[in-house]
Amino acid sequence: MGNDWWRTAAIYQVYVRSFADSNGDGIGDLGGVRDKLGHLADLGVDAVWLTPFYASPMADGGYDVADYRTVDPLFGDLTEAEALVREAHERGLRVLVDLVPNHTSSRHEWFVEALEAGPGSAARARYHFRDGRDGGPPNDWESVFGGPAWTQVADGQWYLHLFDPAQPDLNWDNPEVRAEFDDILRFWLDRGVDGFRVDVAHGMIKAHGLPDAGCTDQASLLTTRELPYFDQDGVHEIYRAWRKILDSYPGERIGVAEAWVPSADRLARYVRSDELHQAFNFHYVEATWSAAGFREVIDASLAAVSGVDAPSTWVLSNHDIQRHVTRYGGGELGLRRARAAALLTMALPGSVYVYQGEELGLPEVTDLPDEVLTDPVWERSGHTDRGRDGCRVPLPWSGGEPPFGFGGPAWLPQPAEWAAYTAEAQRDDPGSMLTLYRRALRLRRDLPRTGLRWLEPGARTPSGTDADEQVLAFGRGADFTCTVNFSSEPVTLPAPGRLILGSLPESEFTAVPGTAGAGHGTHGDGERVTVPPNSAAWWSGDVHG
Ligand code: NOJ
Ligand code: CA
Image (cartoon, helix red, strand yellow):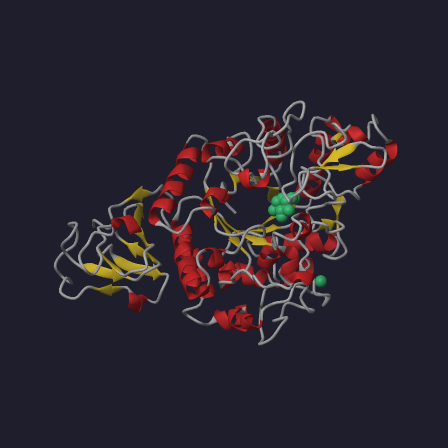
């Protein structure tokens, strides 16, 4: 395990309760992850990030932690967690765990104590308790899940929760809170974990005096404007302290920020050399399917990290957002674009995240019955937002009917059509999404470590019109080119070299008759190839030879 592994790592996100169920209760667990380490090693990823498996009432899928040092019996126990870390390491996989420092569960002993202790107590000072204003909450802040960010308790005071009322926000100006989390970090580092994904990394510090936001529909503004409870400068001091702890352990332990901030430049502040190592690039998630959209976000992302000596990350999906097959149009079109997006993403310099099931090409499940929805967003939005359950449906592993080898009857129902998406059905199919991911992740390991340079694709439609604005082409090193055709038409390009890997079968990337052997190189003459619509390809060689 070499140094700086995280600069180019492919990190696989395991949403534990939907990954694999080892004891037949229909809920994924740590034993299930242990059982499937072979799948992950075979896929070719470098590390696994496990979503929270700590003691929790599960008001928000475990992002409501009641005890940070205990494994919830739903998921296993501490011995199981230690075995998982050890076995992952034996297979050459690193393990990141989720750290939830912005809020605890309302059943955490600190919050229980705070409710009992009453106004003005030291126990309340670990959270944000305030008196109300004009009979209502202390300010106009809204919960990300809908409704006000404040809930009133029996004695009349209000407490802040940027998420569900079952997730009270901690007061990070309180030294006791800081000391407690230093200790939690050490607890897991001592158990061999390779680092942390930091939940709501942009949220721990609130603007002094808790001023009004002055606007409504605040949740929709997460990546567009400043809010008094997000991305405050004070959070960085916390990361500087944590970096010292991470660096005090051997073997490059890392921190990854989940930070929803207005720009790539703001994001880069979380990964300055004395802070965290990576930050999720949600601006990449938000890019719409177009050459210009992707080029812009790629440029902005790379420019932002160039000043801070950190890698960019590339994220297509996670457990909070609609799966990208569906975002890109769904059905055959969505799958085809998702295949292209996978090759584009894995060709970029930096670290890539794979959300469980994207290697199977899973779509979002958009028709879950109302009565099975568990995401607090569904209730908090007054049943106007169906929430995030549709991207959390348990994985199909094998067999022809639910639960598809997941374990017991899955806690969210799996669509019958998923028989075609199982890992088993895809394993030996050369045209499957799983095969594409395996090949790409393997080849990616040998990509040049250099940055990216954009190339003039020299794309034309069959009728001869220029189509460069619908095609991206970039090189890395002297001998690698990636091309992406975002359009719904085939285009021809000057042959970029030998096809290493295409998002579609090789036979679809054809030489244009009459151009073969005419020599490489000059834009517009020489050998041309046809690249199919909504496709990407990796080539050995430059567009301009
Ligand atoms: C981000 C997590 O990814 C999400 O699932 C959770 O609901 C919120 N943070 C609150 O912890
Ligand atoms: Ca289970």
